[in-house]
Image (tube, rainbow, N blue to C red):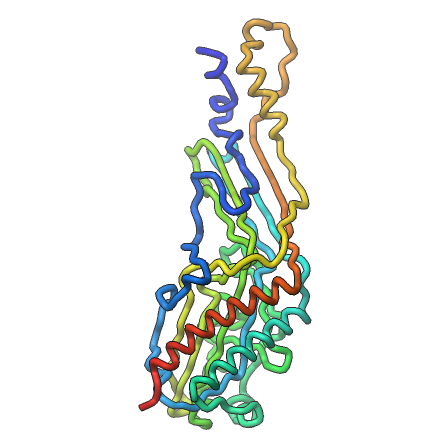
Length: 351
């Protein structure tokens, strides 16, 4: 057997040379993306799942008691190969945004939504009328900012509403909810509001991520492991949706929604910076050079380098936002999603 056959690939049963951390804009194969990627210019209703849109034709009166705006604040991806002999791990944080800025962005997005909603010709109820209703008094707001790492999800998300609006959650907001699916108090309160005011109750939710992560997964027999990060702003599927409710009586009502199914690339809002890296690449390369040189055979008395039994690569990054770029990107995302929602509202008008 030649010296090349005795290299680390045979010893560790994993291709450590393929361990990759960062690939801005893309990563080496084989990688698996979590979601289909769509540029915002090509985004359409085909990227949404629609349910019960016909409810929008029940009445021309609409109440918007809340608007949910969220940002992924932390994300990560890990991969392994060769029964765990190769491990790579990547962590990333969003930096440069605080709660007041999130409230401001929520306000700008909400203002655009209301402006577009009024342009459809619907009657948008005023805050005094909404807040005076018995149903509104029964609502249980969620303290803002609401921060949650959903079960079996690497992302940590912060959600707010405009500062002057309550942050509301009910079952359909899961997994970004602080309420049990069996807690129906807010749902019943919205039914009561809808029945008393003779209106639709609408709550949009806009959630953005700062990175698209990819990885080769955890493989027992694979020969390598890869993770990659593509920085930017992305609409998060599942977390971005448009919910609406209507009830004829306070005890029961119906709900519908549009829910984003594909990841949407919005644009850049800052700079990705690597803040730390810890790996044993040098140790592996030294061992590879030793076994490939046949020194173990031709120079048996030579002191051999330590043979690594594991390969690892741990990296940490920050996506440091520029406030002006962030504001522009968020509003691009808001205007596009709101435009699609208005198209559905216009297509389902009261007769």
